[in-house]
Image (cartoon, rainbow, N blue to C red; front, side, top):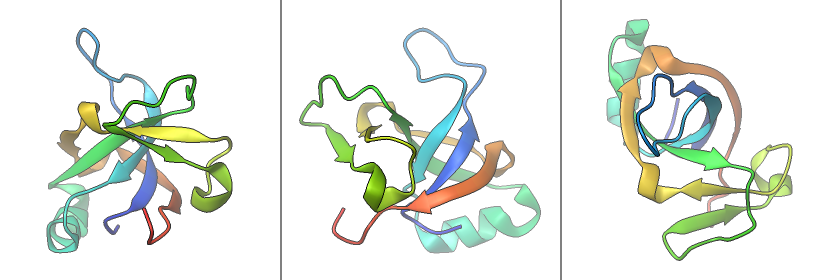
Length: 101
């Protein structure tokens, strides 16, 4: 797993307004930390949840065109929801952000 990769991530249980359920998320932790976390699935990874609700994109969110990222529809990364999760919460890889993002 590398910074910029998009994975399905199990974010439950969540509290209050935290992003919940299994949803796409962008890996934002550095590659050295990701390699360490990937060995045996015992470490942690920092991710930014993604939602397909693009009705409003705030300045602290990033629009992700589906054609550029491997997502099923245009989406946005919710930087205000950044969190560190156990590597075991990551499921399958969906795609990756283009270098420009």
